[in-house]
Image 1: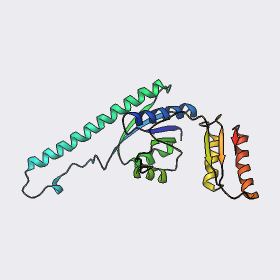
Image 2: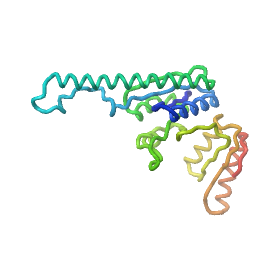
Image 3: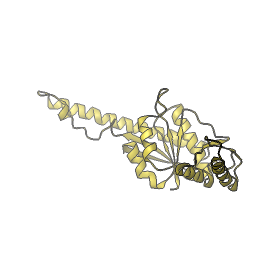
Image 4: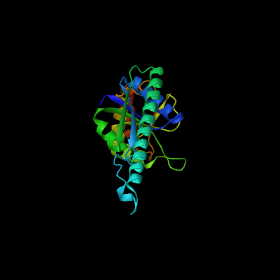
Length: 223
């Protein structure tokens, strides 16, 4: 679990933001960066057999032409992905990443990321979706199924100057707090530790215990 994986799946501002965020994280963590592009199997199927979709009486030449067009589409998408990866690699190098690797896969995004999970320290991915949907279904599925830390981006990235932990004392929240406390990713940044609940002694003790863990790791904390 030693590399930062960045899913480069677009062009323009979104791809640039993903690359900038991944470069920042790679340098903060001291971990190598891999830029990933996945050709979605649903959009670019490997099987180009169109015989099941052509009605009776169609000529063999039409079948061959349709299969050829599909193969060309896959080749063009692969080439576009390669160019995007090269551009992202150059941008990462300009940001100070010495040797960003590139990787192109054909398949499903979630399955590809699961294969890479054992060697993934942090996943950087765009939220997808639209103004009405905070996350695309594909990204939401990745978040639910991939048990790795993630940095999910909107269209813009700026290196954070402070961060907030929404804490409720649950096992998941405690694990998140431990991950933050042990990682150099946010070290040195002021932390806002927020717990929403009744003003009881137990709740105050839970909040103070979480604050003390961060203070022990050298964080400046406002609880």
